[in-house]
Length: 386
Image (cartoon, rainbow, N blue to C red; front, side):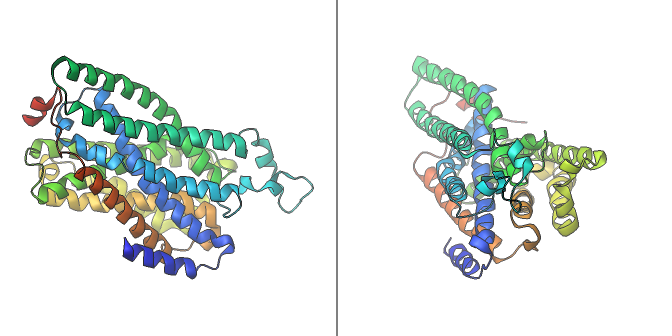
């Protein structure tokens, strides 16, 4: 974390772009990446409640610990949104009032004027606060409720289980809407002349995949330290299956969005891909290869998903691949030709956020038993075998 802080500080001092635009963009991309990891994990956590999945009970506290980064991640994202609204950065061109002034020929943008009924600061902030508040509320509620369930048994435990079920249903419905909304507001509106009906799903696929990968890496780390002895090869195989499956979901959405847009060749849609493919082809294709081809080639077999060393190695590489994908979402649109390659700022902020993320997750793990004490499906999870 200290190393990341030093690297980021050196990068910021050496950033001579207007309003430190490069620094803000690198900070924002990394803030979103780790926030999305926590959100994707929180979604999967709630999904397991709704589907009443038993095998995940043994690793439930791992998912909770990762999700506990949501409040801190929300603060980092909020910082960038506030800075953009008051003109400290220019990540969102539509926030510049001059873009709405027809008398200002140098800055007026009719496209932004057309979208001003939706893309205006008051309505933007209503949506942003609603999204962040909802996610933080459910994160804290799920955690507190899980700890209360450890002290319950019998009918009280079953009643709490069904309460968890009902809350999770509500959360997933809200998440389905808000995950797309935040993708439109916080990312797609950076390239304000571009639109994609698949974009919300694509961002969701990335956050879910990143969450699954992070959970696998954390479980394997804990097992390597002698913790979670009741987590078996069967649990690891199922976690590997999810890592494999959601990687394919992301790949499908990535290719579908690209193929339909590129083949149709509609100007207001290809404008997103042209600068990425022309200026950053290696980064664009490396991202797709790492996040699609690697899981397909390396995680297909049963043995691969049961090998801790192999699984953690593949997981780390794909983790980096999704970080690269997040950089591609943010940096070309905010920096244009000034983004040439991944450098000190991107890596420095990544290291800084990674340290803060690890610290938050490990602190959450230390505050409660690593496995749940009381749950209706605890015995079934202990004896899970495939």
